[in-house]
Image (tube, rainbow, N blue to C red; front, side, top):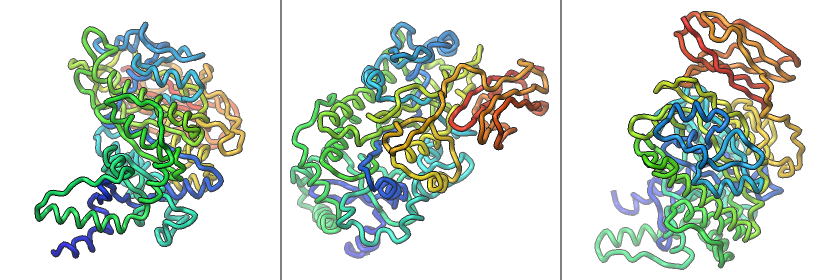
Length: 526
């Protein structure tokens, strides 16, 4: 195939990165979510920054359960963080942070962080690739979706996109990813809507007008030609340049921190006035099967370095945005494809698990810890997982509704189901009052008796108005049954759970009524 034929037939599909003055970009597939965010927030300039912790983060060593510390320490004697070194949170005694996360601790104590406990989904997948796909597309574990978790919305709202874009009203890219891998979170059924900045070096080359020299070879001439085509076809170069050049001074960021370098670019573009709605950055290395901690001091080691880098980068990012008078535009969130097992392994590490905490941060984020410390068994086995308290799609639903002001009907179409919303963001952001109840009540909303039990146990639950759901999971996170899923009038209800067909062991009954949830461990014995 001739060179120009190759470019003609492959460039529109954005298979290869394009280069503009040494600035490497990659076109995303269409992201319905991103236009949704732009449309749903026409009267504001809100931004969401997603931080992907690739590899599967050990959430139990990130947010340490102090109220069940004895069970935690017994389950992972070789890697448990020393109780005296756990970072305390203002007015919250049940949990604390890894000692390396002083930046997040400061932001929490300033009222700018919400921690959501045990986020996952029913019947989790432990493959890095499949689990990542589930998180980025918003699918159930048993379905494959070809669009991102917001893609469905944009396709219904902008069926003609991308015709006419960019334009005077929308001159900026709707999404920017720092990194060269196209995220399925931005995938839609139509054309490309965003760009990826492959590295900090490429970004600064663009704004400084630096072009990497090409070798004086046949392939060098080919590269030079590709750059020419890319520069001619890129529609967003000037808006990125204009935004970047408005910011000449930024705050201090930690050195030798790849995530900090990415967030520094994001802060510059946001403060420069770019109207991009969604940013994706990433930090890798969280697949900690071995040597997660140091033998002499479990507060140090590989995982500590990762969490410290994450925490320091987020703190520097928020401080920079504050200094640039742009922090009120931003909400950020961390996520990983899965957590790790409760019990540590003999290599001073942890194996692939299920639920893990998420961190939501920003000026308008409601301070607090949602959910209880994970339910830990008295004696753990290698297959035991942290039971899910919140579905990850509840986080998406809450941010879309409370930050981007998406109405409830559209929201259910976006996520395909009506997921519970959590009080993550102040109602001021969308001009509403949430009036949500206290989600961390000590009142037992779900119990069972007898416990332990043989084949049958009576489950009792106390619910308010609206839909109530009860799910039963095993210790691997597999969904066993959904005995209750209906609208109730407020009151106390009971039913008999039949476990005759189940093997002996621990099971978890999860209660959900609107934003309120609780998890009840149940033990079946012979």
